Length: 268
Image 1 (cartoon, rainbow, N blue to C red):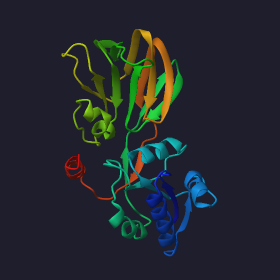
Image 2 (cartoon, one colour; image 1 turned 135 degrees about the horizontal axis):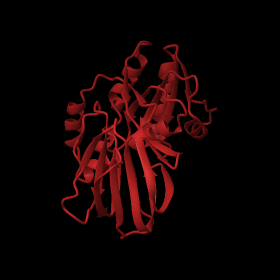
Image 3 (cartoon, rainbow, N blue to C red; image 1 turned 180 degrees about the vertical axis):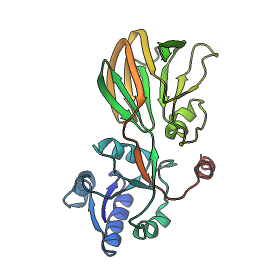
Image 4 (cartoon, rainbow, N blue to C red; image 1 turned 45 degrees about the vertical axis):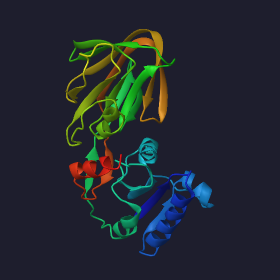
């Protein structure tokens, strides 16, 4: 089995753990390597994601999101939490070595839907957690129209708008007042940021519907995808929102979602 280890590059302890992880897995007969970023810091030659059976990420949610963004073709991933809370990482360092080295070839996979964004037929990117529409200049409000199946469902002004997956409901969306959503649900979570009217509330919309976000403002805005990529939107236009064709793939570590949320939230 070929395993690729990806590590956050700003933490010496995490890098030391990644080196130990590679050595341990190599002794079990696995073909193990590092991605290019990790390898450069450890003085080794990096390997591509192509042809990899499993990607092991040593880091927090940001490292996992960046890894998913970098994959042109999704590969099953397992995260070892080396961050703050780590909702996307199922393993803690104390249990990770034993879990990964005993991972069977027939491991089960959990699919997590991603959201695809496009404008005028041009693909802007895919998000595993969320996309954020905010003004390019701080302290300015934007005007939005939410169009569902060609019907204007809501219009409001706010500091911004979060379009989140169920997976991302425990991230920025939760901090902004959105609900925690079971990741098995296929839908889009819309959370206005500091809306001008208190009646503007979060919405959960089925991914089978046609969803369009219309930006109707005189102020320029940006689309920030998973905190990794920023797209300039200008001051007006429509963004088509749909379920991405290819979901993110996570190795099933047999962690109950609601138990994990309870344990993680107790640390906040």
